[in-house]
Amino acid sequence: MTEYRPVPDEYRATYHRFLDYAFSPEAGPQAYESDDDVRARLADRRGLFDGDDLQAVCGHHWFTARIRGDWHEMAGLSAVASPPENRRQGLVTRLLRESLAEYRDRDVLFAALWPFDYGFYRRYGWGTVTRFTKYETTPEALALDTEPSGEFRRLDEDDWELLDPVHDAHGEDYALTVDRIEDWWCERALDTWGDADPYVYGWFRDGEARAYLVYEVEEDGDDKRLHVTDRAHVDHEAFRHVLRFLRYHDSQVEVVRFYGPADENLLDLVDDPREVDCEVKTGPMFRLVDVPAALERVVDPGQTAASRDSADSIVLDVTDPLVDWNEGRFALDVAGESVDCTRTEADPDVRTDVNGLSQVVAGYHSVDEAERYGNLTILDDDAGDRLAALFPSRDVFLRENF
Image (tube, one colour):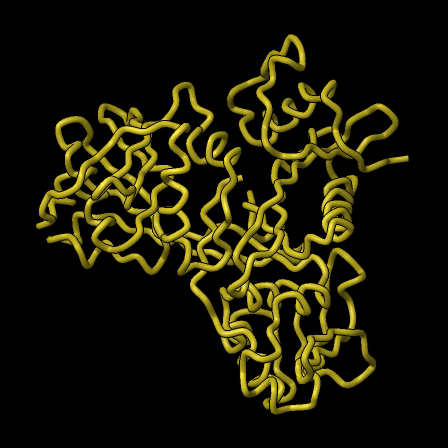
């Protein structure tokens, strides 16, 4: 009988062989003489076992993320993989369902992932919640009229505490910003798992870090490319100094590549926007683990007049393709001093799948946008207006790679 459970250390090599084949088969089979040869990762390893036979795997990260203006626990699902001989047997569906059950047991009501295929995970209830912009240009194109000031300082992972306030300040304006811990800084943000450690630089003024960037220099055919893997700044001035720093590499690299929130418009800063290749891309996906518990956790009953002035509940008819505890009708009552979301037999005001509702809760879509683009239907206009007042759209930028 197949059982979901933690993957012990003695299976680490097998676990990573699954990941190697799933995500980098072009590298060929990797040889691990022992489990000690496999570098440890921050994720908690989980797998499906048939007796002692490991059949499929995944990893769980445990984050604290800003959702609706407050900090909440959020799971990061990663490394979902199975070897080809075990596919088309429903193992991944079982793995995802068991993962959500574990999150729910741990009172973690939100889950995010980076998809290998958006359609695949959309079928299991996740919805896209981040758009970001990829910029690629030359150092010369970043020649702005920024007056040099402050100082650039070379840093390493031991300096993460200097960078943490910069990251937090940059993330204040974005939903799903993660409250990074030391291990995440040192093992993920400041370590790209390549053959060499990345470069880390900060821009300081009056002894205080105001911006930072983490980057690698890569071979790009006959040219070299500076690829920024992480960066943050406390304000627009600090961002301009980041661009100045990249400009100073014109004698070393031909191309600069970096990413940013979708609302950060480099094209309005440079002299010639035609010199900048700009591509808007989608990022992580997100879903509610437990719909009624999540809504009770994030809704503030006093945040809008619309919620206070109506004694009527908003009845949501929710479908979930993966877990039955989210299937059905839920009455969201926000008129009292506390928020209650309970099952009901009342006629629905709003019909939605968990994907669309998750995007609304995250802030990626307003209620109107969810009705326009997603699978959310307003059946009662007044209830729809009250739901929109509870969940206005937000700028969302989940930057972490996991």
